[in-house]
Amino acid sequence: MVDTAVRLTEQDARAIVELAALAPSIHNTQPWRWRLDGTGLHLFADPERLLQVADHEGRQLLISCGAALAFARFAVRSRGLVPEVTYGPLEETGPPTARDPLATITVTGRQPATAAEKDPAQAIAARHTDRRPFLAGERGRLGPDDVSALRRAAETEAAWAWFVEDTDSRITASVLLSRADWQETHDPAYAEELRRWRRDSPTAADGLPTEVVGGVAESRQSEFVLRDFDVARGDTSSVAPSRGTPAGGGAASASASASVEHPVLLAIGTDSDRPVDRLLGGAATGRVLVTATERGLAASPLGQVLDLPALREQLRASFGLAGHVQMLLRVGRPDPDLPPLPATPRRPVDEILDVA
Image (tube, rainbow, N blue to C red; front, side, top):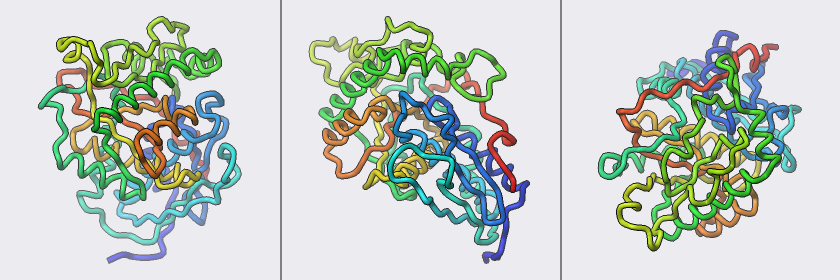
């Protein structure tokens, strides 16, 4: 039975926002703010945290906020509250502003949460972006139930998930990722922006701490190039398309091919590409990541090719998709012999929540 006429308390809001703040965001910019008032809990963009070079459209900002919205909804439900989300009004052109909320969460009633509805909140706390090598071969293979669960997770958020499995599509994705990575890492403005978001201080509340991202991109050969955060330190010597090795690499020897990582490649998308669709794509990404964590899987984004509009459109056309790719993930099973990942810093609740 659902009780009606419930208002979120400040205590509720603080707990919800604390969990929502664990959502992934580009360069860990955490580009969101929340406001609690008598009408609900409102999610706003924080345009001061917009990446003017890597994300001048504000596309990744919206996807990041969409993931935070999904995490907030999980948190609301885990507290025995029934959430309802309304969107906008959203500007149809230009990057998001702080004038109007991106979305509002209201509570339509109380209903005890089932164990399955509490699990996502626990998975959020355990989730990490894992850029390290995944298990290879049979040990790393995703089962049919894993594939179905990840697809359902995206579809629950009015999005879709497509596993990039055919050789031609994987080669194209690898080439376009390498091209995008090369363009970004050889752009001085991009390197300077990335440098501003690198963090050496252990007390930093945002940005990219060295112990989390440093050196990972160069630690092995992969079919798909990972974003190189060490460009922020002025070292582009290791940044070249060769860091991503396309599938079916021609004259490569069998032994060399065996040493190249071949992760699962998952595209998450929406039928349209309006601002609300980017929020939905972010929410779908958040739910997919939580579902992956619940199933013992790990993931990390391959966002370079989506940063650049021309290459993003080329990727969509090459995949033969009618919709729009909002996120590209590498997915796999983490190596249990590797040490636990350190927590990525987060801004305190008092910095991102206003109570009217």
